[in-house]
Length: 132
Image (cartoon, rainbow, N blue to C red; front, top):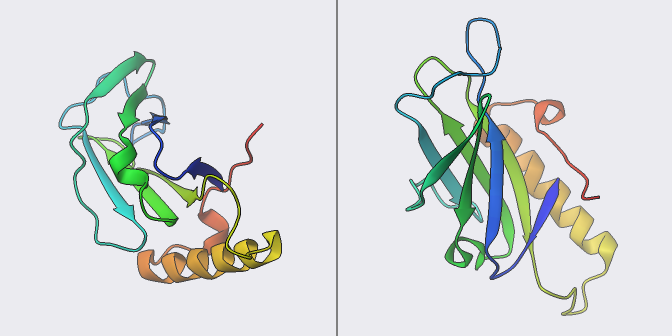
């Protein structure tokens, strides 16, 4: 799972692939984004989506969307594409408040299990990334 720092602006990059053959989507029609922060219902963010090319897109996530500590789920889809989704974890600027890394990992594991059940997606299929 990738992490984002609380109250920070971030560039999110994603790849859309065709539902038919899973090749990069040449042109995205009716491109939509949805975000769920800290377990809230999905909402459409007020952001501009930029096309990078070869099915890749990006948008700048304003700091307003990273105010709450917890999971941030991002979903993107377009006409004829498979849904792209990823989970980020919004963490405090410094780990404080008496929480250990173990405490945080336990909270993340619980949140992932809850979202797995809510989205009806096996937890093994939820993308977990590691920052370089």
